[in-house]
Length: 491
Image 1 (cartoon, helix red, strand yellow):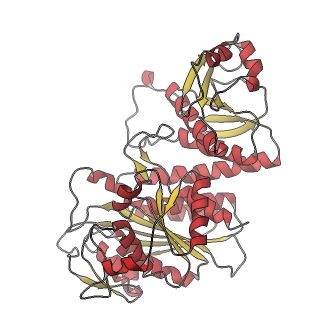
Image 2 (image 1 turned 90 degrees about the horizontal axis):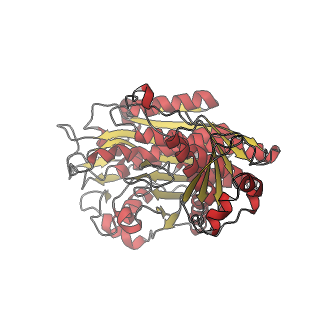
């Protein structure tokens, strides 16, 4: 469970909490906490003057607290401030992680005067740092257990704007937590059926409309591209459609699309065994859609949104697709399957075609689509593909605000020759050169009736290393980008 978060404008020095975290920028001073420093006998100032703490990003220094008031004090560095809200979000996540390690049931967070957007960012960070997935771990002996982080307090003014900002931060944090939990679950538990049941829980709670298509319904729809991926698995594939009607009736919806490969073995073009267990993360696009719709429902945003998910597993078997097979897509185009491990684009092709029936204002898809984007951008930025420069800028601004940066990649017609087929309209792989671009170019073939952006999140949806603010594993990307893009459409 995430910590319960509240606001309190109490004095820092007298606020009673097991842990007080104070976020400070590069080259800090104690002017904002003079009363606390006086109560500590000048310890904070001595540590800063002596350069024991310099305020560098992610730097921490802990002090023993007082007989009354905070029992421990943790200084958290934010470094040189370029994006204060982003720096506060990261510092809050580090504070919450440290509270969990210490077994503190309650953490207070202080960073001086906070604007409403900054309060929202702190709330998102506290929930991110407090998140953990323990569902499948046997608890340690009772005497070795640490108490969970149950509560967090942001020391800031309480007014209508700050309360609303806190509520938004909690909603976004809950969406992130849902996305990370789904992604972290093993593939034998987080199945297409489970994603569909999660969608039902969200839609029931927020009064949204849910449509779920299985293998039979997709066969009737003529989704040969999607079903070619699912034909090697006994699990029933699912196309999940969620409709949130927060806007005016008839207004075109923002449509969010997620790849939901609950496990990807590569099919007949099987992947190497090393690190194949990480292919449970191949549904992070779908997790981002569900997380975003949950957050949007919690915030009751006045806009129409559709979420679409293509969920299945990609397995080798006697019924699996073979390299060289040709299938007919929902749009009617024939696709030559060159590589069965280029399966995500086959699923998305039919989902993107299905999106037409909602008459979308814009469609943004997110998928852990290619290893090539990791080679191009590493694990720092999401690849952003599209042909509308204004729309690309809008999506990248949303990602920056959410702390999920993206980088625009080319999508020129020159690349189309790489996916021309000798026997069909198009082939699903152009080989190694420009692999992320040709994958996006393939998707573009199914999106000509509406504005569209593709996010390749293969490098950013999960991490194989601890990221300091959050542990290794799922990051929650692209939940924040989706939410900020939808909110941006309200202005």
